[in-house]
Amino acid sequence: QIHQVHDYIKPSIYSCIGEIALAIGAGIAKYLQFWLAALQQGVQVAAQTKGQLARDPDNYDEDLRFYQDTLCEGLLQGYVGIVHGLKAAEKTSPGAVDALLQHPAGVQGGCLFVMQTLADDEDKSEAVLKAAVSLIGDLADTYGPKVAADLQHHAVLSLLAQAKDSTFHETIEMAAWAAARLQP
Image 1 (cartoon, helix red, strand yellow):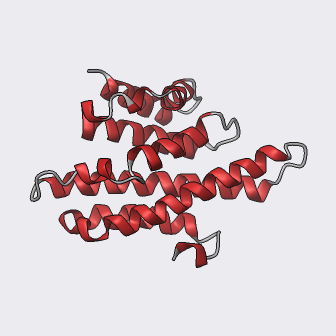
Image 2 (cartoon, one colour):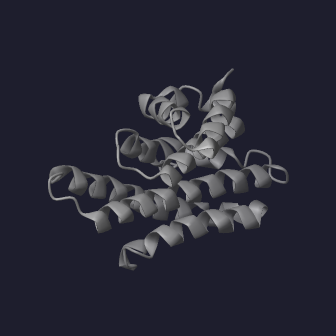
Image 3 (cartoon, one colour):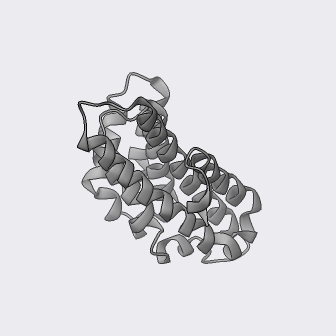
């Protein structure tokens, strides 16, 4: 039960989910539903935290802002690790990558929801933007036409545009790579 864990530990847990998924590859299937459920809880917390920050913009809470950034970065890293883990599992278990598409907390209920939360967030960190664009590229690279319509969502396109306009070279390169993956 991830809701029983202290808030400031959750971002690291979400990131670790991605690292473990990446490391175990073919063994991912038996844990996937639990990891996606945990990530889904994090996605909901990120949306609530965004709401808290938006409700009182005059009373800027730096700690809450930092928490939002680390939470979203951890979630994005978790999803990236799962995508790569499923891709590795595909080598020994054909069809493994489709597990993310079939789960309600997968692409639409998880990945895209985080991106929607981030798209109009003007205060997100560069690390969060880069992680979001990395996930966009990984989803396009792994799933291609299966997620093409989802990746044309205004939130995805907005994040790509923001990354292309970044002042950080790595983020700009990541945006170019992700945009190339979106091309048919």
